[in-house]
Image (tube, rainbow, N blue to C red):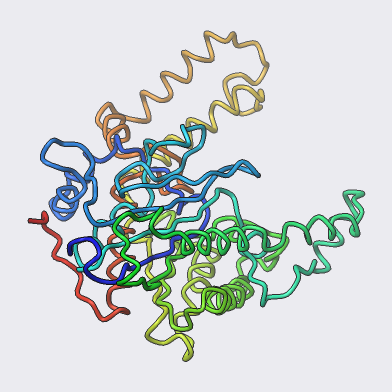
Length: 401
């Protein structure tokens, strides 16, 4: 890290939906240290006092929120710039996404001061919410229209609502970036106008809402089911570069990895291929990189989550009086149901597994189990991919000096 103002400010944009927000609780940091391979990374994430590192050369401006209730949070980069659901909008919260280790890596690797501009909202699609302008208007396919008719809904009204929603979060993302660029000193006190700034990279982590949308992508279990996503993402990259006047802006795609490498379902594999596809286009060669996130999934926590899912199913069966389960006649008292579930859980999940879950996980599978180790590895590898495209060297994995 150089002295503030000595070289042009390097600016990186991070955008996407809930996993870019980040749902890994800081309380799961200890789990990172359990693995000798990632313990050095934890050493970067914590200071000698055991508290999350406060970067000396990296800052963040983070636009997030719910619905129209958006807010911007910023300051020197540290842990806490993850999902902010219900949190105080004036200070960092209790979660991280990939931004923390991304910024830590850039801070260490670059002589220049670093600014992250992060825009992320949960539950957003590329086909509608982040739809790039060059993709044109959203178009309902025939299966979608037929489903609307079956539900007694007016296709015309639905199209109008879709028109209003299309590209809304793309525009907010671009507007926020432009706003920050227009007042860089406010977002980054280290900024020296005489030294200037450079848009140095863009990271995209999104996809879940598209992957589970059976109407926009109706060809279930087919290899080409998500080809449209590839087309939209290609246009997204072109439009971001055009709108920010950065024609060769290095672009990192964080490829969907929930479920890990063991999830070989046709739709998951199809979606991962579709997400990674733009990086192989001739026009993007050398300036777009696809980083697979499946290797960062925790298999041991995933195995426990599978058992937890069985407990959730049993709870549903007891409440719904399922004919094949203990409360088929609906006569179990609330106390009996609680006792039944407690024994079912105790037989299924050992005390050691329960302790491991508490140490390493803090959310659902679609949020990578809220595992800080997973998000830390994502951020590190996203930064390394961006540095390669910038022609820079990634720092070693050990504790910084």
